[in-house]
Every structure is written in structure tokens, then in C-alpha cells.
Image 1 (tube, rainbow, N blue to C red):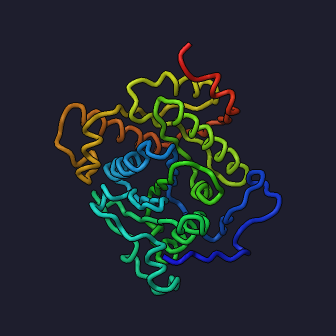
Image 2: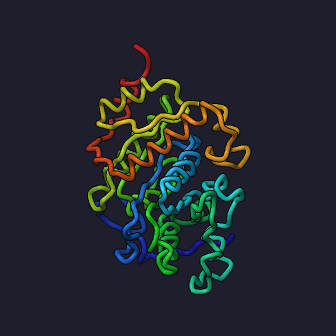
Length: 302
């Protein structure tokens, strides 16, 4: 793939109120998503954000909502349990028409997944060559131009692992609530702390606020609870480390398609309750990040 060329005029430079030293693609006011409820799912790489996002999308659809899931990771595997395939990315299809978006049709980049969930994989620029914020912006622009957001009730951004630049914090410009997936371990919580800092920076200029924490692959939550108590976060749902969840990924299926069992029904109900909670609205959490040293001192066994 050729490098994605991004106009210099599209990138913020100089002092920024949006986070000290911020260099990123700013939000075009014309690209606001509209009336849909928008959630951005963050967390450490490999923590299970795509599994969480896809099953949450299905849970919303089971509640009768029209759902769009947008994968924001160059490896474009956010939606494969919904569609049963690795879909072409927005960047792929744009490149195929020499970056002339007017030549694209909705079916070129939007695919219907399980239970009617619409799926888009934004993709990303080649490593070291561009800004992820540009990719997210182009994706939302295409969706708006083709009126694919007009009748959407819920949009879920599944964002790649670690927030290290303004570009991959771009979904926070569109979301009203950011949710953080974490496990009950130091590395996951350390990454969560950085995400809290990113959301805090974005909240200065955008409507995004922290919605809460989703504990994943966790039999216990003592370390998460300890961190939450210091930062003002709250755990909204907890999913244990069950083999059925691992097998669902191998079968390219959501948890709502797996062979019924008592433990599976409990997990499905947890997703349905989380979807209902989010749909009814969750109060923003006025949480703040800790210093790195404080996390080291806070976590662990006494």
C-alpha cells in the first residue's frame, strides 16, 4: 500500500488547548455523527476490546437498536465475529479508486453482520507514514455522505490498544461516552490510566466523558477496585475468563451464536444489562489519572 498523504493544513500545530503538545487531525464540525448514541471502547492491546465491542453491538441489536460498529485498528479484525470474514478497510477501498471517494458505494465498505449489525473497518495508514485521526475522519465523512448514520441508534468505535497520539484518540471527538476494558492486573490498569488522561484532555473541547470500566478476563477485581477508588472510576460490567469466550473467537462467532449453557447465558445477560444501562444513559465520571509512580505504589498485595 502506498503511503497516505495528509495535507499539512489538516494537522494542528502550535500550542493546543486539547492536550499540551497535541498534534492531530481536528474535528470538522460538519462531520458530527448526529443523533446516535456514540461509544468509544478503549483498553490495553489484547485485552479483548473487539470481543467486548462485537458482543455489546449484538446486545444493543437484541434490544431492537440499529447498530454500527467501526473498527479503528490497522489489523481490521474488530468485526470478524460479526461478519465471519476480514473485511476490506476504508483505506483499502479508497486506495482502489485512487482516493476519489465519490466513486465508492456503501456496499464497498459497509457490511451487514450478525443480527443486522452494520460493520465498518476504518483500517489505518502504513506504519510510520500517517495519522490514524485522518482515517477515522474519512470513515465518518463517507458514512455521512452516504446517509448511513441517519437511521443509526448506536455507534461503537472499537479503538486500537494504547493511546499514544492524538490521531488514535480521534474517536473521542465523536463519542459521548468512553468505556475502558481492563483486566485485574498492573499492565492493563497502567494502560487504563493513560486512557483516562487522554479522555480528560479531549473533554476540554468535546462532549466525550468517561462512562465507566468493563472488567474482562477477571475472576477478581480487587486491583481494579483499588484503582477506581483513587481515580473516581466505576466498574459497569465484569466478564470472567471463560473458555467459551475463547472458543467464540476461534469459531468466528459472537457469544450470542454459541451452543447454549448456563455460564454462557450469564455472560449474555451481562452484555444485555450493560447495553440497557448504556442506552438509558450513564452519568459522566469526573475521574482523573494518577502519576506513574502513584500506580506503582497503589497496586499489588500489601
